[in-house]
Length: 327
Figure 1: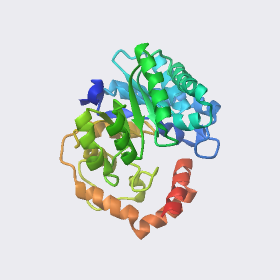
Figure 2: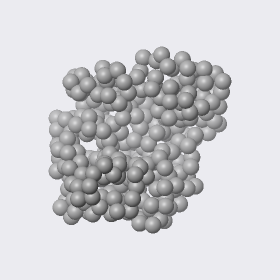
Figure 3: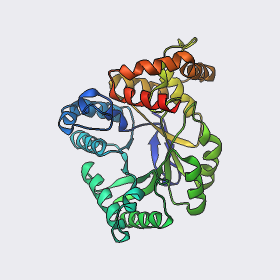
């Protein structure tokens, strides 16, 4: 495992991190519709996720992102059982805090932030998280809501309960303007992949100037949101040293501004594949990624999207329908 510094946080994080969204894929963990979780069934699958996290830690992974409640709970249960010796860095997420503030009187705004941070700390079974991340600050944004949120988070920092403040967003232009005006985040989580390259010119220069740590999401979900590009079949020349997923990860890591990638891993095999991507040496075949992109956007790719409407995986069905509506 190789490590990079997460901007001005100074944290040395593994190039490959672990996110939580993959927990929502397996059918036994859902109620039949994307986003709904049957917690009883979810907990029945906890031993498998604990084994995945154990292997990741053994391989040197030290960065874990948690977004939804079940993700934080699952990681907390795993770490409590594993009791890792090495340093583990965890990001907790404040889910759309400005939208929650929009529905509450101003006198309750700070309570909303305090309650969510305390809830997430309880779920991961610790009294400290390295980063508290604001999800989608562009949603229902107002300057006063940002100020209240930052005030509450800085209080948690002074109490030693969080280390740094971050943000996660797909709206990079909004995030850039927010950072230029307020320089309020120590790290950001943003999408970046072969199809979605906006961050390279729009955000990376600002990240260098302000020493903002960069965590990458959606390394595989392109060109259609939520669907791994590998689902559209093989292309000529992919029989080389790296798999399609490994090529995508290695292409992303060519950018020095990036500290880590929180890649989805639904099982141990996918974890091992991703681990190999950062361990191997070799050149990245960008033309191969271009062929994958062309295949996914071709008429055949559009036909495969329609076929995915009957896929056994709930998330694939959900995002295929979304992609077809958007196209």
